[in-house]
Length: 466
View 1: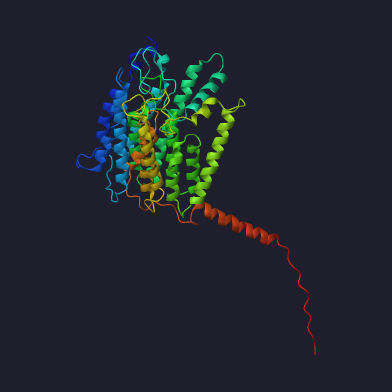
View 2 (view 1 turned 60 degrees about the vertical axis):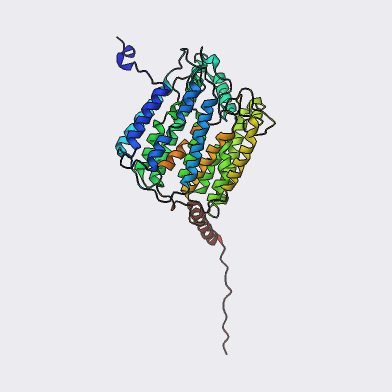
């Protein structure tokens, strides 16, 4: 018997329902505080699984998607209230996980290896119920939705087109495209997990809490879902990519220049990070706001220029990129119904799509309020309000609003494991590394100018003798 046909390699991946139940049981064993049943930590551990029934309802073949989207929006509403409630929490008891750091690190590594194994599995061809989140359509990939959910769809299509054009003749173009997409997704998940560990170490001053957040992120079923052509996917790279950059923005919040660069890169590829800009400008008001905004504009502009060169390599921008600016998925005009290819609570349901306008106006008012309240802000306020702003998009976004949990999931995990962060604030002007570097360069410049300055010869002094 060959090694590839050995019984030890006949591993069957669990379906989404099985992974949901087993991950929930393991999360309770790891993070539930049995000696404090009414603690906020216990409620957070259980509530992070609230959206999963909505995804399972959407995967049910023949069932109206209205109830699935309604469940997802209800879960988003709970998360929004939880983020706002977090603004009032000042004292946070230290509740460590039930497993030590070494055990969490081993489990996180094992989960990441499992993630790679899921990504490396070839797409299935068996007939399964259609779902744009949890698997293939009945009869194979031809039943897939042409416009998959996500705000970076034009970029994804162009990446796929470039791969098909540049692939050698002996390489399967579809498998190459699928491998690149899944590889980018796994890389984004790894960057997010590393960022969570470093935030716990540097800002929470608790490496154990950071590793717990990273382990919980890899344990949740959402990181394994949302990828087409797989019975159990590994997420969507265009969903995880912006959050990977924003998590590292939080990590480098003490350096406004670097933080602005990370947020600018995220905003240069997808629209929704722009909505947190007023919040973070308020966070840095009087403490590096100009450097943050300048770095944001430069990095976002550079990213847009690079994308323009890549997408316009054939001489003109593809029509899909120009059309993306006109999509009524994010233009909440009541006189423009959602596009026919879209799905969600506002499409083909009893709830009229015109009610998106008052919801959007309330959302814009909330985004504007984050620029002034609370003041001043610490890191806990910034994390909670950033998550709230990203969650609020789910209610008015026309194309499958509610499914984009990867947009804010890492921030929710930071809320769960954070201590009191009132001391985590941007450094006053003149005390950060950029200001110190500028003073040192100015000092060196003055010394060089002093050495290069020509010396003036003095006339001899004559004494009068009486």
